[in-house]
Image (cartoon, rainbow, N blue to C red; front, top):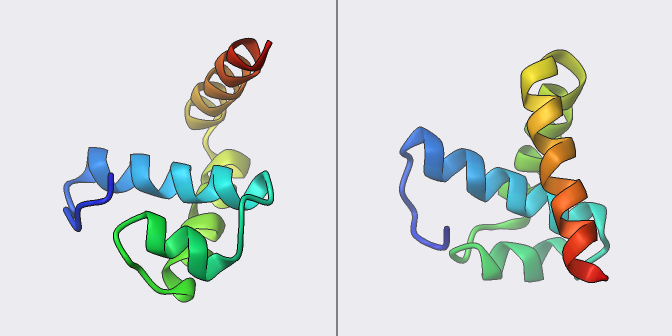
Amino acid sequence: MKEKSREREIADARNVGMWWHCKNGSGSLKTIGTFYGDVDHATVLAAKKKVNNLIETNSIFREKINAILAEIELLKR
């Protein structure tokens, strides 16, 4: 996910990762961007906005995100 690929699957996974890091307060936008292939803070904000929009408007995407978040919670235990 750190590569600069624009393939849809990779880009979507990278966007969800950036969204998750923002959601969980895992560092500044610059730090998150650096982790995901040295992208700038605006790219992180755009990813966050895009994922939030998809969660609100796409029920299939929302279900996938909820399943991923549930899996992460299980792994934390």
